[in-house]
Image: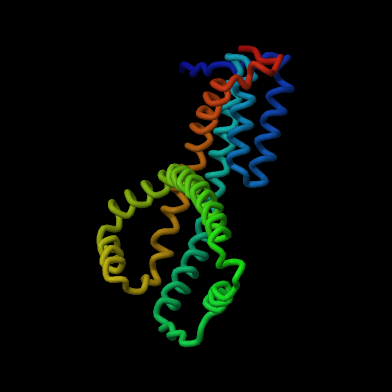
Length: 236
C-alpha cells in the first residue's frame, strides 16, 4: 500500500516571529470586524516575507477565513430565524396604510424661517453657500460612487450564489417573488426561511474569496507606490 507524500511545510526560522506577528494582527483585525484593515495587514506582511514564505502565510489566512465561514454555516438556523422575523415585520409594515400628513413639518417651518432671514437672502451669501454645497456635493458623490462600486464587488459572490441556488432549486418561488416585486405587493412571509441558507452560504464564499483576492490586490498597489522600499527588512 503506497502512501501519499505531502509537501513539507518549510518556513525559515528567522521568519517565524514575523509570520506569527502577521497572523496575530490578522486575527485582531478580524475580531474588530474591519475587513479593509485585515486585507491591508495581509498585503503588508505578504510583501515583507520572502518568496518561499509569503504563500504559506497567505494560505494560513485563507484557512482561517474558511474556518470562519464554516462556523457561520453552523449558525444557519439562527440567521434563518432572524431573517424570517425581519420578513414578517416587513410584510406587516407594508400592509399598514400610512396616513396623509396635513400639518406642516419641521423642515417646512425651517425653510420658511430661512426665507424670512435677510442675511441668508443676500445674493453674495447665497452664492457662497451654493459654491460650498456644490463642492461638498461633488465630493460626496465621488465617495458614494466609489463606495457603491466596492460594495457591489464585495457582495457580488453572495448575490450570484443566492440567485443561482434559487434558480436551480426554487424556480416557482422565484417567479412568485418577481411577480410580487413587479406589482409592489407586500413581501411574502416565507422569504426569510427561503433565502437564509443560501445567503449564509454566499457569505461564507464571499469571506473566503475576499481573503484570497483582495490582499493580493492591495499588495500590488502597495508595491506600485513603493511602500516596501521604505522597509529595510523586505526580502524581495
